[in-house]
Structures are given as C-alpha cells and as structure tokens.
Image (tube, rainbow, N blue to C red):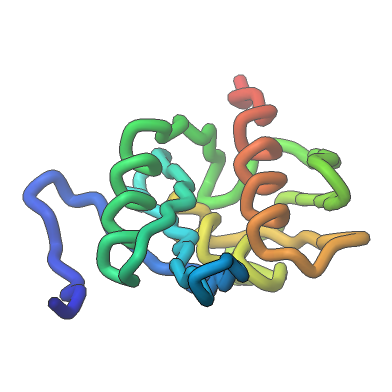
Length: 152
C-alpha cells in the first residue's frame, strides 16, 4: 500500500518532513518500526506538526497527519511575515525568528522553512542553534509560533 498525497476537501496540505527507521534488538531477533514527522497547514495561518509511529511507513504517516490535524495552532501574521522577533528554547534546540521585509523570502533552514511556508508566512529570517535534531527543531518552531502575539 503506497501513500499517495491527496488534496483534502478542507484545503489543508500535508508534508512529510522526516521518516526514520527504528530498529530494536529483542530475543526473537530485530523489531523494526518507522516514525514519520509530518506538518500540515492551510497556508492561511493554521499549522500543526505530528510524529507518528507504525510498522509500515504509510501507517506512520497517517498517524502523524491525524495527530497534526488535531493539534493545529493559529499563527498571527502581518504583511506575509511574523509580527515581531522571538527567541525560543525547547529541549536542546534554540530558535531565533525575525520578521523580514516583503520579497526577502524564508531565510531559515531545515524543517522550519517548511512549517513557516505551511503557516502562510512568506518572509522571515531565523537561525537554529544547538540542535541538528529535526524533531526538536520542529517542536521549537511550533512553540515559537504559539508565542507570537498579534500586531495591533
């Protein structure tokens, strides 16, 4: 059963950010499973991230999408960028996000770019510090977006 990307009726896009094969030694041999990090968003200010695990890749992706859809947050935007600068820490990851003028684009790396694009933010700059773990980086991004206050 192959996973096919389908555009749902509600207009929420799904993007697979990371797929990992997890292996565990047991007395009967190796136990293998998969974990999938998935981001969903409507490019209109709502975004969510989910981590699903399963014995097959499509099953893990489906679980991740289900979790991400249930835990979507609203992201305040101002002229296609974020309203103000934010510095956030989650676990070992530190993220600095700053607003950018129109036309600059997303000057930030890793999974943060995908999450910001799915949230509908087209101009921002940022830096990820102290972490190369994509799961931690996605969680710190969601925490930073949740801390944003709307601009008056």
